[in-house]
Length: 407
Image 1: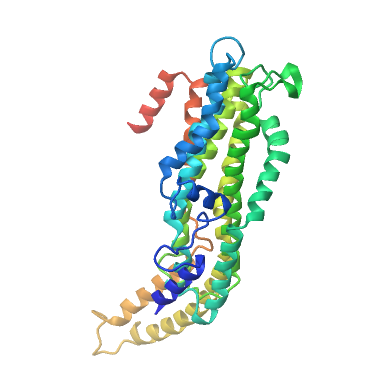
Image 2: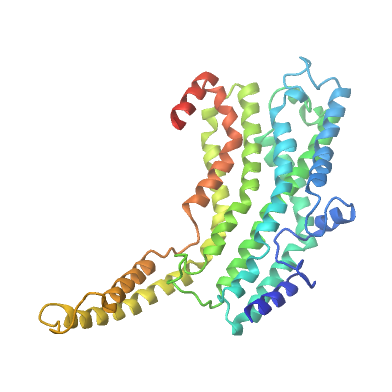
């Protein structure tokens, strides 16, 4: 019966029928439909490699051609030639493809999450219609044309003139611009870079933040539904343990952020004379930001989990008191009948089981977040920054330290 309800929910999610109608925070929107018509994406985000190649080529390849044509691809013509610009290659050849890979990974790993609420019995049949309303609302928001148009406006109104120029742009002569010439000093490659490549990347990144907002809003609406939560659940997360695994789906997204930050820092180190340690606050902020993005939505169920835990502690506490009192009267000296023996008694095993049940309730977490998931996300963010350690620690010394850790 529950499987049938879950199938109906899945069909409601996209208005389609069949196995392909699974809930997805990434499978929709105007850009998705455009990519499908351009034959660089399938109905379920297939053709990942083709999509990576086409989008990365659109952002990076014209820059190479125009930089070569302008004599700024390599050599000493400018302080930062194109082929030595670490940030631009990290952004368009590493971070951008990772953003595209992240779409497929998130879709595959999270498409059954909505139905799990029903299959696991968390949503009672009487609350199923409210749950369906939450799913439909998430799909409508995900597919919003106005939302993606607003993102384009934000990118050109704030992303380029404010964020990119203040954070990533260098104050030295580069392949894309000469700061001494003012805003009009953009080269041909610079014009494509500023008005096509960077906006494209920023739009894809902003679109990811929007999808996480859709995810958070969906979970928040589900958390407003009275759920059948039990703090006795074996996952020790009140039955929400299946949500803990969603964090691993966002590993490529975390690596994309790490790669983007690594490119920005590398350019500062190589061309502005900054030190790696000067960016430690930025690194900490990016890691904290990603942890908040990924794990923040999972905290919306804390109230229901806490309520279930308090109720279970009260109920099991009363039961334990009654059981212990009867057990002591029966089995402790003075109460043990002469013909009775504690060996093999089910009462003793029942007392141990009751103690284990109480321990399960006490150890129940209020949020479905694990230490492994947190560490995985942190490491994924920091991995692209690891090569920058060579700017402060010689390769031989770094290798020696790593050997000490593994030996």
